[in-house]
Amino acid sequence: MRFLAEGAHGDMAWMETTAQRRGDPRALWPDARSVIMLGMNYGPDDDPLRILRERSHGAISVYAQGDDYHEVIKPRLKAIARWLIAQAGGDAKVFVDTAAVMEKPLAQAAGLGWQGKHTNLVSRHYGSWLFLGAIFTTLVLAPDAPEGDHCGQCRACLDICPTAAFPEPYRLDARRCISYLTIEHKGPIPLELRPRMGNRIYGCDDCLAVCPWNKFAQLGRETKLSARQQLKAPALAELALLDDTAFRALFAKSPVKRIGRDRFVRNVLIAIGNSGDLSLAVAAERLLADVSPLVRGAAVWALGRLDAERLTTLTPRRAMESDPGVRDEWSAALAEVTA
Image 1 (cartoon, helix red, strand yellow):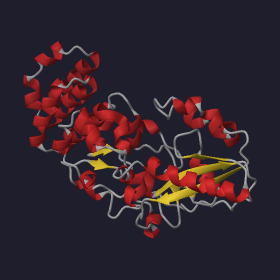
Image 2: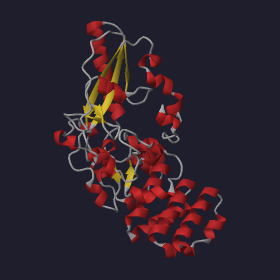
Image 3: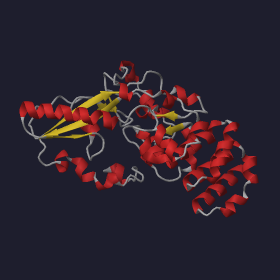
Image 4: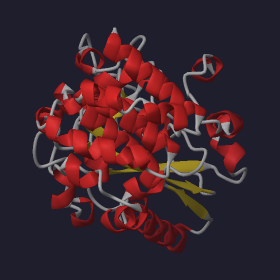
């Protein structure tokens, strides 16, 4: 697969180890004869891009502002599978984005939508806002007609990407994708991409939000997936204070919890550095002493962006820093300050 051969999957090594199983559903379950694809709408109640103008607040992707969709969808898939078995016999297994299943191509083959130029599924009825789930069954079912591509000449999703993560239509380089960088990437975020991230602290909705097919989108009706008020526009100053206990409490039942406090605060610090809000320099400076090297490194960068003069007065800390990665952050930040 070209995506893997070019290393566009970044450090998501599991994509390589499961590649063979992803190529054919029967490799995952040899007894499967049919796949039933289902979608659940999670259309937002306002413009997801509006938060990007509130630079002292964090932007969390729409899908992650409510409860974890895995926990909402999987029980429903199991209920449908039980009904199917009771009615028609056979056996069934359900999957929600946690196994080696190529949900989007299967959803297109099932007629739910098509993979747009941003590589996500687009529906003529729900726009870009669909969660996908799969029921594998031993039953032989008549297939639905596949959905054709309706992107036409539109490039809206490609042109809006702040990090130029699409080398060409229908191709994504995850290493440049803000969703990958803020969620999957475990280490320091590449320096050249940090300024482009703005205040996006978990995921990115830009390419989804600008899709013209969203004019047909509908408001999601599942209350558990509705945005929690405290996650719609959280203040960066408050998020920077989170320790592990407070992080877990704030993101209980949320998909955000899986990346852990350190990665999340790393993201918050990148947003602080991009905020232009000098009052947030205090938060960045406080986190220079954080127990996590990942957090300390991001704090150096954020402070350098907001208060370069203050950073230069703290240069002795660089020599005392025990982690080589954080020392490199100091060097890079000071080089930018003195350039």
